[in-house]
Length: 252
Ligand SMILES: *Cc1c(COP(=O)(O)O)cnc(C)c1O
Image 1: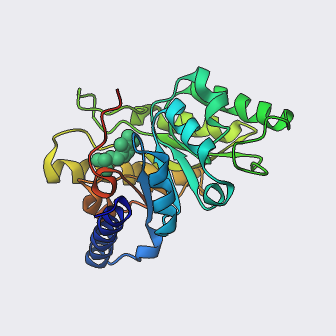
Image 2: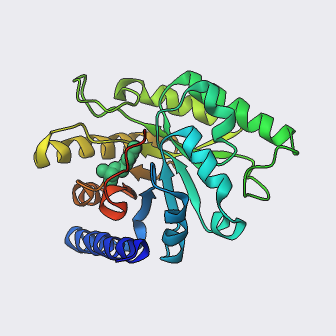
Image 3: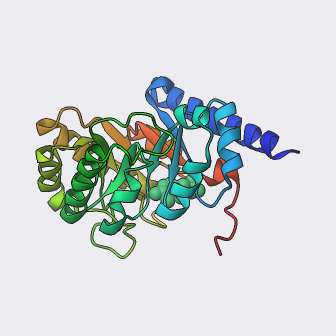
């Protein structure tokens, strides 16, 4: 089987899982966006994905992501929304805003400030064109990553729920960022009931954020192993890697 056929088969299976889970939950599959997480996979896979109708991809390491997006031909780049989903150091903010359309992993006040200044610098330096994008939007879309680990070691990064509202308010006070919603990674090893409870907490937090920030409608949750649970919990965006692209090549 060619690489393209392999991806096509896996993608069809994942789309079928999404369709079935939406039917079970009484949800419109059109309200669920599939983001294919392409980290560690070659840029040629992105071409296959676009050919197969994928509109959203996710990357979690700044250097790798920037290099891959820069390699795309303009038509492929223009067909994609690029989500950055990994841990981000503040000194990488200026780089990430050059290729990412959405940063999903905003988890602290310092990073909000760094991203805001990075978008401002991008706007003031028109020679520094965003890779592959003719005219970057004025504002960068961000999600706040929430820690669903309840203080346990199982947490997978993110801001603690107690601090979430203040961070949401801070984003809205910036000039160059726009708050689109929340993201979370389910803690390891919770099983189905525990994962359901964790995603339920995310859904509740999303509703609370929307009380004061009504446009923050995105809930990014669900990966290869738990996308059905995420759909039942109301996720609007799924981030799926392994189930579509296979196990990740060793990065080193
Ligand atoms: C890698 C990654 C995913 C995809 O995980 P799979 O289990 O391969 O589907 C989703 N979200 C984030 C933040 C990731 O880093």
